[in-house]
Length: 147
Image 1 (cartoon, helix red, strand yellow):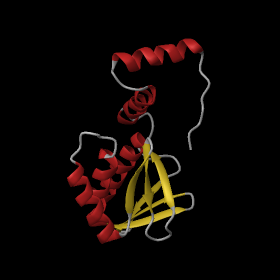
Image 2 (cartoon, rainbow, N blue to C red; image 1 turned 30 degrees about the horizontal axis):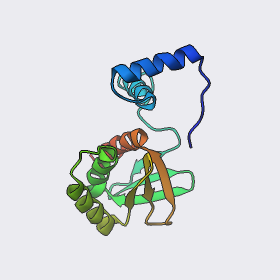
Image 3 (cartoon, helix red, strand yellow; image 1 turned 120 degrees about the vertical axis):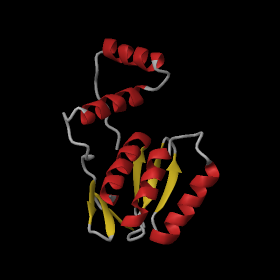
């Protein structure tokens, strides 16, 4: 769920300037900063509130009352889908094959929703909404558990 953060107007304008100079958005500027801090080891790569574990044959994703489990072998496919969801230039036919194949093998579904996406649990039918850059980070976590 989005949280609004109060910043001085001057900082907001500076963020707009950075975003414009990088031809991106303010949320993407902030996401880039967070990723840089993860890479520098300042904070862990795990996403607060989302638990990704490996049981060996399966990867389990838990976030609040959302739970989904996929075969470990399908982890890289889900990771790619989550990371690539925001790429408008991505091959739509390839994405469609991945989505259909992943759903057939694991029951988990990924669908686009506004400026984000939703992961649908095959266990409960519950949906978990994710911002696109957080979805990409989740994809990285899933891929690590697939190794």
